[in-house]
Image (cartoon, rainbow, N blue to C red; front, side, top):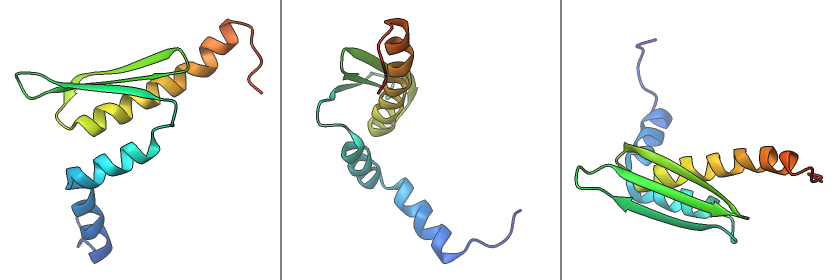
Length: 93
């Protein structure tokens, strides 16, 4: 740990820090049937929300990059899907 950063690691870090690349990647991950919204609050924090198949996931206002809020909300929505489906007694396949 604490060694030199390789050129590959430096390029990767630069991509992660470029909000445009992160936004493009997150939008590419969104399913076609997803509905998503985002809000930037006065303090600069963001709230991302994703609805997918009747389920909704929201990302609380801890981040400052809206795309990361959308990603967190999408992951929460996808994680809830098997749980809600099982509670309803529906088959996942």
